[in-house]
Image 1: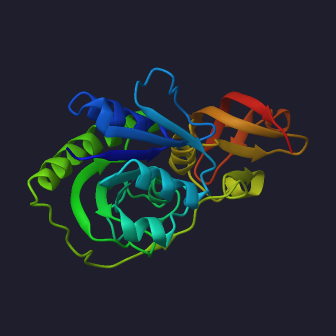
Image 2: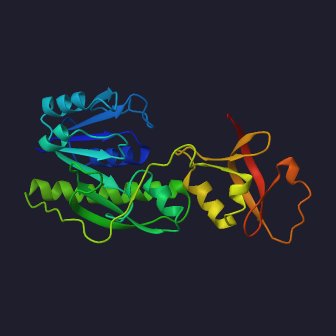
Image 3: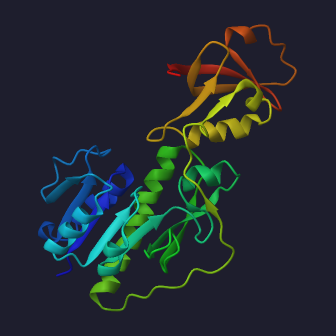
Length: 271
């Protein structure tokens, strides 16, 4: 029977793991995660390994000692060593139409550039980031709340994972070379995810709304730097451009390119 490892830490990837456990015997699946995963691993009655995510030597040893055939690096944010990639069938899930939007923060980098029609791409990892051969690519909408987007990634990812395992067991698995125009974007930093009042004057209400929804938990959120404090912006309401601002100094309204936004909910952030 095929031995599988899930190397994950995101909740959406955990859902794919639990769905897989419904079809495959627990003794044939192991979990490798970082020391502080987003999910609770206590309920899982499978072999579990908590590691430093940068410890590729340990990852290799765990995979080898457990005779793993397929290693699913789903939502894994750390570099994987060539030794691991060369010795195991390493599979990655990336939420974009590869070869477009290779690199970090693919959901945010697409939404903030007005891309709402995307895909879930499952591919075989190689020594170059997000450039391996594709097993399958399925449409993914980036409209709506981030929770809905992540849930859809779990659903689509589960179906593709089942298909891949079926093909692998029948020795009929095929991978295809990535084709078309490629693009690469870096992982967004804390600085990228904050705006000052002058920055806000250059973007529209709907662009600000995209910032908010794409950066909600489990992501770090959008921070706005005001004159006397920095806030985590949570919810806003659009106000027509003709609105006369009388309370801007009280940090109740934000001036945007096309309108004003009323701050409905926020928390104070640290500088």
